[in-house]
Length: 305
Ligand code: CP
Ligand code: NVA
Image 1 (cartoon, rainbow, N blue to C red):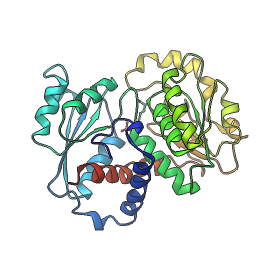
Image 2 (image 1 turned 90 degrees about the horizontal axis):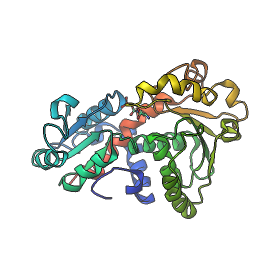
Image 3 (image 1 turned 45 degrees about the vertical axis):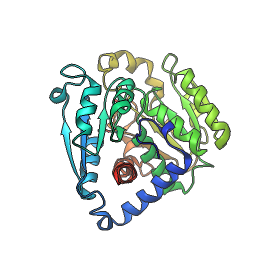
């Protein structure tokens, strides 16, 4: 596996399968791995808020016998008090790994380019690889394989959607993406994914019609309409995205037993209704739990010497 995990593109299919196998063992038997990362330290540099990413990395590291600490936005003041590269150079002298949650993806690339320890992307404006890995792990747990599965993503063509796209293209899962006009995935990103999809057999469909995306889908996924950093756009987006809500009507033509997924945090009543989020089809809190198991596997792969 490469030194850093900044995007799903950093992983081979074999890496992904290894992470899933290890995550499964970690989920089954927590005690067995209680000392696996003893003596190791992980720094969490976050420029944006977090519940799942911060807590799952911190608890995961603790459960592996290691230690982690959180550096809040005002603490390091990345790029203002000190350049990102100098932060990376310094932290590399103290810690065994860095998780970075940031705005521009370039910050992840800059940090990884000089850090001598692994850098893990805990969300950038471009991608959220740990989320997509936990999502696919959750789908596998429920539906056994990925190859014959179609996931429909309905909403904003954002970081989470990018990572799902690459993850689908890598693993052979089929993906239908429905976004409103003007909020589609970047065409260059889609182009890259289509190249990968040729090898894996994944079918990628891009549309502006949520009903067409969801028709026959085994999994329906959504995310917030306005991501962190876009809060001031929410009123405008509420109008533009109103037909892209995951609700009972939209799910009528999905496959029977369709799984409903959301990376969380959810804005109930906007991109997803209470009824759907709280239904028996919803696996959103399993996804949240699996963040920890999958990230523990990633930490072992990257930090264990
Ligand atoms: N899904 C996710 O990354 O959640 P947080 O923003 O709470 O970390
Ligand atoms: N797209 C969302 C994901 C949050 C986990 C954001 O970037 O805010």
